[in-house]
Length: 166
Image (tube, rainbow, N blue to C red; front, top):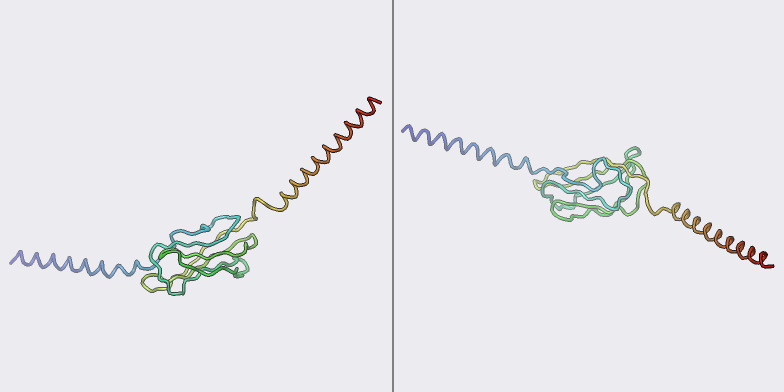
């Protein structure tokens, strides 16, 4: 009889444990942002798309949306359609490079448990580097000056030879 009582207690403890674990699972169905492009608090000089990766599966119910806005003015920047790359990843194209400044990316997605999740983060867009018109014009100017100096030098050398011979 004593063994029967121990068995019932063990069974009760096991049942409570299983029920509490089963009840705990939906709490983890909410999703969090796992990875992002551009990264949180980063400083970038170019942005052609925004890609967000979440920790748990998302529901493609047509409500997923990525927004881009300036921090100070709150002005929305037009983005392409938010599309699903996989069950965990959404992305939106940035058709035109915005002006340099501080921006916030906001998102809204539906997690697997049906709850709407939203959040956001900031990043800074710097002045573009690389193939700017200034560097191109400077390069053309240097080449033009070198060409002119070569032509003038060869004329002076030719004139000098003629006066030495004459």
